[in-house]
Image (cartoon, rainbow, N blue to C red):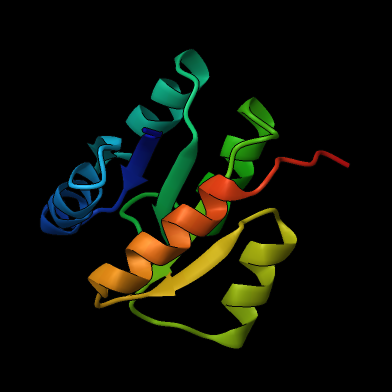
Length: 124
């Protein structure tokens, strides 16, 4: 069982991801406010952060950078409904492990989460 944080400004998206991953026995903490998710990550060890690219106050890239400051070894999967090669490259270059396109496919989400969690963390 993994501890997972989900940050998405759409409440229903966070609830959907939570329901899917709890069926796989993961503990999921959904957030819709960037600062609340970052503060949670300062005080809690988590195995994975699932992060939307488009948020209310910050971009997913900005939140990714903040998370890496407070927890350099955090494993992060980006979500987006507006995929571009540029944003995918930027997210991956900043340390995201995976990139998933919305609408969320249940099997794809489960497979990518399992794959990320199975990887060893390497900090250069």
